[in-house]
Length: 346
Image (cartoon, rainbow, N blue to C red; front, side, top):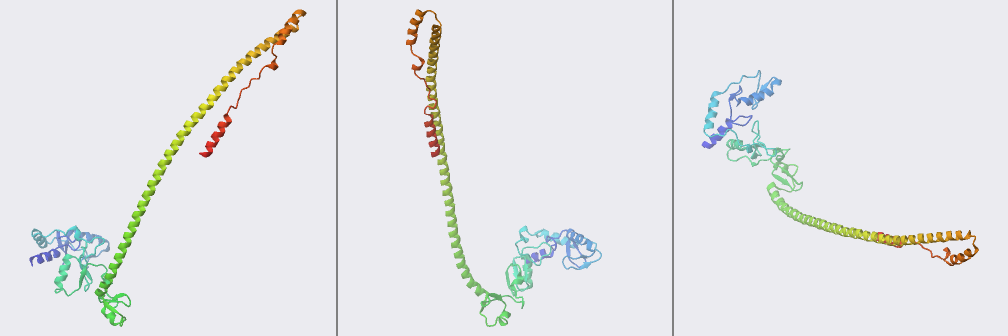
């Protein structure tokens, strides 16, 4: 009983604007009390309107009332604090973006824990205890906190939707059964929930089986992609190795062919140089013989002419000397042909 009185006192001595325990409490003309800073901030926002109202009962005041500290109320709050009353509820007690708000809280809303289908209101823990004190005997139908309570009430008769029409496949109230749904196949929402729960279980099992199949398929696809990537990487490495070997082989063959061509070049140039020297020697001898013939043709001594003519004419003439040639295209055409064939294969 003492705990209930403390809880009731906590609600009574909390500021309706900030929901915290009253600080520098002031009581305005209508009898409601607020924190000094809270009511000042509220009325400062209404300054342009020229009319100031109570945030709780909406009674208006003109001009703006002069605020004075309620000394007796301040002493009561101080005593409640000494008794162990919390200055403010924990942060998790306030409603978040996805929580159902308490319809009774003023200012910052606390999180609702229950909803009453008779009052069509949702309550935080403190106000739900007040609701139960005002409605003893559990006469009101209470459910877990839910938003849009109006969706649970029949729009035609303002009664709770507690019957399910299987003919029209929708929830209705008891008066709807008598009126437009007369003769339809109806059951309680609880009975229909039990029936639908079985179908929901089957649907969940089917959905979970499909999810497992899809996850297995996804896993197989991932493995296939990994295998493909691994095979591609091996193929790239093999091709790189083969092309590297081919390039090294071609470089080696190029060096060998270049050396072969140079060997042929050096051999033929050496032979040409030998022929060059031999031809120069033959030319020198022929020029010498020609000079002797020229000299003989101008001699006046007939006996000397005849004796010399026999010896000079008996030597080889230029027409009888062998021809000297150099092969300028020595096997190079064959090398070019082989290289062209190799290029086509590559």
